Image (cartoon, rainbow, N blue to C red; front, top):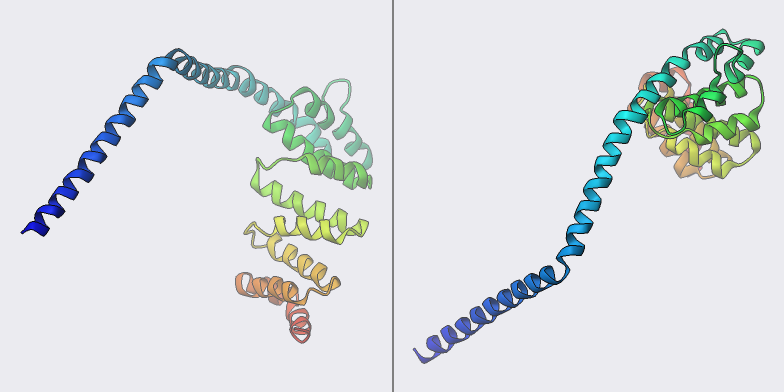
Length: 236
């Protein structure tokens, strides 16, 4: 009985301590708030003002500007689709009546359309065989459109591969294969496997080929990946 009473007293003491700590915390919080309430209210109001400004900026500036930029993309895209050197130059530079990709990029900064224009500017330079400028604009393309972004990473990988920069090529091919496109992903996985083979990283090469077999078996057969996979596995 005495032991039970002692335990009860200890539990009661702990509960009292907990209550006291809770009360102390509550008191401290109230005192802190009373002391700094003007600052706290100021911070809250500032945050609300920033949120309101962002909403207003998007509604009254970026949305209309993006719509205007989207309309301006029609002419350069038409030139780009034509594909000849003169048309590609017009797609980039524009003419007396229409803006080109480069003007859209500079005049409609921070819009989704300007970002898309960077991608097509890169493609245009690539078709004109100006690989330095192509790489410059492709590297500026931000991930706002998933399908184009993954294709862009593969193109950057190709350009670094041509430059002999295997490390950067592998880095961008790895980004490209995070997509699940039934056509382009296995092609980029194969490129990645080839890069790993060159650096004699047989394990990663085998993994790339294995993913093609597991996830894209039709392409695995059509691309003749089996012989490359067998060769790599023999070196593990």
